[in-house]
Image (cartoon, rainbow, N blue to C red; front, side, top):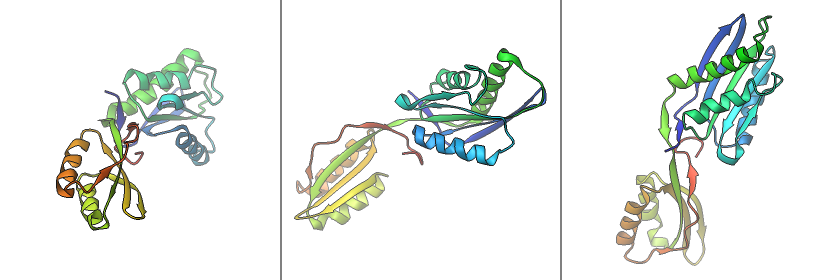
Length: 207
């Protein structure tokens, strides 16, 4: 089962006077990753490189940021893949120490920086989210809202018309029990619309 991270974790290495500052963190998509990298560059204006790797399905990336091709981003990405991670961003900020490390030295430095951060990171299973839609009488809206809160479901949309239409999502493992409770307490007055296709989601701030 793919894993993500519970929270960001940092690491730091000094190799031949160069300073490597690493971070691994949960990250759902490329747009979020590029925004974080831009923030790092602003935070470290004296750094010579801010290299990064994102493992997020079709939005994965490996960026050397001026280091010789294949010596930074790709090795960092391989570390993430080797640990069966998904939805994870790895960044390494490098301050130049005046001594060239060579291609092999760079690969080791960037690999080790990410690996050390991952040693301290808490890994959490990624759970699939089930997206559901239903219609119900106004009298049952309060009941449904309470049940969603108890099930830790996320209410995504509420439409008020002749009846109330609600959309929500929760983990696939929790969905059957919630549906059974709602069908019983609603006494057949809750109508289920075609469920949307389940998608991979993180049970974290990235969800």
